[in-house]
Amino acid sequence: MALEVCLPLPLIRLSISPTNGTAHHGVTLGTEPLTVCATHSTDLAPIGANTAHSLCQSCTRAFLILNTPPQPGGEPGLRPAVGTGKGATAHLPIPGHLMGYCGKSLEPRSTSARRVCANCTALVAALNRFHRLASEVCMPADEVCPREEDVLWAPSGPGDLVTGHRRNAATGIAPCGTLLSAPNPDATVECARCVRVWKTERDRRATALARMRARARWWHQHRELQTFPGRAADLNSGDSYTVSGCLDRHHVLAVTHQAQGWRLTILAYLPTDDEIVELGLHHDRLLAIERPQVPELGMPALP
Image (tube, rainbow, N blue to C red):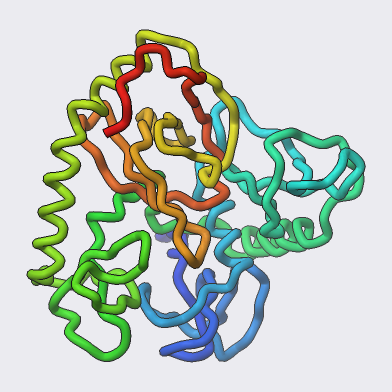
């Protein structure tokens, strides 16, 4: 008699509406939908990867919990929320982030408070239920340091999906002025106006490369550095950082805080690749940050 082999279920997006509304991460068990946040409706059905849906915030945090490498050496079991005292409610941190299961920003220090956030506990219960019912799940690949410039975007609303556009991280708009909706992995042609702007940016980076190489060499020759754990939002131009799941040291040339959302765009020099690249990071991603002491004794200035 042949043995039945149970393959991991793929994590997919589910929604009641096929075109808009709120999407959830989850799986289908036979014909039954199961979400990671414990939202239940028999009308939930699989949807595509790049639709106009807004993503359930609990599912977004659950995805980070399931898919982020923890900091080397481990992390405190509980942390306090930003701006709270020693006796305040304790929160369970998402691995590799200074953000609680409940979504609150957390302090780098640990806490011994006995009262644990009810919303953190609720998401723990939802994830435990999900694991119990779904068993092993196949997670989609999520890059630790996704390169923003490798992504082409689709225009907002009905439009040309054959042509892909570059995205200005500071404005969220294409260099050609087109409003954008979502990544467009199926684009076969790149917008000519976007290409011209991107060529100018590549030339600018090539000019800055020699000085960023010199700064990276200085880093290994001097130790007048302040080292501390912090969130991506704490980064300044001239800092260096490492992040869990990636062996590279990142030397920061510029940081762009987007007007909306929780994502930062960082222009950084990677010595391993010997190039300056544009990277995306979550606002609350936990980093090991190194910052030169003032004055920067002998360090080459930023380009």
